[in-house]
Image (tube, rainbow over all chains, first blue to last red; front, side, top):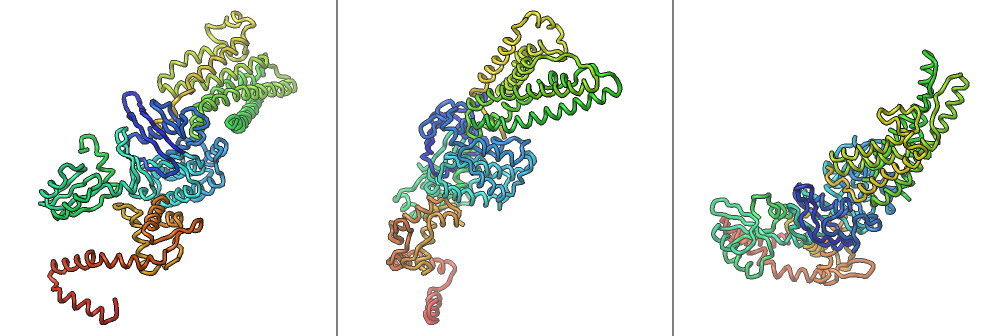
Amino acid sequence: MRVDVQGLTVRYGDVTAVDDMSFSLQGNKIYGLLGRNGSGKTSLMSALAGYRRPVGSVQLDGAPVFENAAALRQVCLVRHSAHAADKGDKVSYVLEYGAAWRDTWDNGYALELVELFKIPLGTKVGELSLGQRSALGVVIGLASRSPLTMLDESHLGMDTPTRYAFYDTLLHDFMEHPRTIIISTHLIEELSSLLEEVLIIDAGRLVLQEEADVLRSRGTEVTGNASDVDEFTAGLTVLSSRSLGRTKAAMVYGALADDQLVRARQLGLELGPIALQDLFVHLTEPVGGKR
Amino acid sequence: MKIFRHLTTSLVTFCALVAGGAFVFAVAVTFAVSLFRDVEISAWNVAASQIGPWFLLFIGVYAIHNMLPIAVAHGRTRREFLVAASVFSVVLAVLMTAVEWLGFLVEGGIYSLMDWRADEHAAQPAYFLMYLVWFAVGMLCAAAFDRYGPGGVFVLPVAFALVVVTRVQMPGAGNLPFVQDIPVLLGPGWTAALAASFAVALAGTWAIARDMPIRTRSV
Amino acid sequence: MFDDRSPIYRQIADRIKADVLSGALKADEQVMSTNQYAAYYRINPATAAKAFQQLVDEQVLYKKRGIGMFVSTQARDMLRAQGRETFFGEVVDPMVAEARAIGIPLSEVIRRIEQHEKNGGV
């Protein structure tokens, strides 16, 4: 499912959570929505799911989503299950809602997942652990089989084996039923290999949208003699640098041209890759830090 | 249609069970009271005219506060939900009126067997309209508080005015202070007043909930 | 499983090439499908597909429509030829530099290599 966001702004009183954001997603990929806490991930997804009337426009396959029955049918947003369930409802009742109100709901699959994540059917949602509630959110999200499925911090509270089960399940179901999946997270390391495309947002604005694998080759760490490093990085986008004695390491963003590579070799500089996680950290430096 | 069906299957059963339980309780209380003194009023009328409306108000609140966000989270529009909830309000009021009627029927039998005295109760349309209004007012209050937070208190005077009318034709509902003359003022137009009350509550609910943000700040 | 520092598709492609070189994957043998690869290594299927595409472009693999990917007949010879080209630059030269840095005379390194030769390979 194609997603087009144009000039989207979300405000709560004086706080601007999403600030004039525009982007398009081609669809049928797994997207990572990366941002620090409070960067506007949840507000953005809420607008995509038609939870609030957008300022600006949000279109799914060319149709506005807000209060549009045909478009809304195709969307599912879960955030540790809170949206689609009441704290006082039993897990089995939560699944009944899905079965009753979603045309695309696969109840057999839902029951399979509930068993996989060991969620007790007779327990009330409010009495589940955070990890179990997150898992229930994943169950709702995946069993909905929605053309646009959004999982907001769905790994919260899950222990490591459960997270891996979640990644495997997600990947498997995505391959069986290709659809547009958006996962928001600020824990990038584990998830990054699952993502095809990445959107990084910060303070309500889109910082970049890029294929994950391309992004991985975007950053370079330049290490060497401090003065040589300074000479080499002059005019380049330096995300951060640190020094140890006369040695300096600088993180440079952007692909390096061939003549730059030659120059680096001449200067005896060491060039190394940067992890996606580090790149993310430096692209979303806290207010007051370097940009 | 899916929303309406789900509302009906889940809530109608629940409400019927609660009403049935209330009836058994009312009869039990009557028997208990009869041990100490003569029975002079209908216990079921207390349940039907005083507790019943509050129960419907509660269901109305539940529908908007709890079920509407879930419906939207499951890919349904607010409009679809409100259509279903509006139709459902009539269905539920009819059901509760039927339960009320049945209750009086059975209670009447018990009373005549036991030779107890009951006070008078209202006609069926009065109960039906009362339930209808209270349910709609419940939805109105929930919509106002969910949308405007503490600002929702401003809807309370309106809500009060809307439900006061339902007390007019209701013996046993407790006499309202200050407004005892209303029945006379309204005369036979009370049904119209109640219907208008329902329409206002429903229209208010629609106006507020029609494009209400859902769970945007939930954690 | 994969380091997060260089494109995953390239890491996968390198791994398959290594398998071809070592003989773990033989000529005309079918390799795992994109989805099998993705599930096994817990990576996005598009990434796996990209690695395969690169290998097809480099003629290490060939596609049989509707069946899957196979190791091409000339793949091993080709990779060996490529490996030979870069072997001295990428393996021997750094080794020599390392030996110098830690003070091992080259004559000793040569003696060691000759020993391997006498023992019949590695």
